Image (cartoon, rainbow, N blue to C red):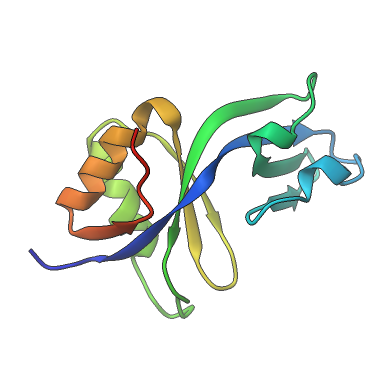
Length: 132
């Protein structure tokens, strides 16, 4: 089987939070090895470690995360499609975050074992897989 690339699991559980568009970036959101903050006219969206989010914050909890290993040049095409298409065919929803260097794929905890199985069958090598 041809390898499609390598993915690395992040050890934490994550939450995707929504604050008002004019909210200040809260200190609780900035810790950990992976944080994503995006502001639009409609919201301040934060992906951060779930255990950092205080009670009362609007969020979707229980996400697990895979990082595409290495740096992806901007001219590279199809990375996200290669990850998300087989998961969509398996009925697994995802939340994707892209950075300058790479892409992150978040999957709900209840879908995590199935998602890993699908991606492994597609030829992805997955490092750091914890027992589920």
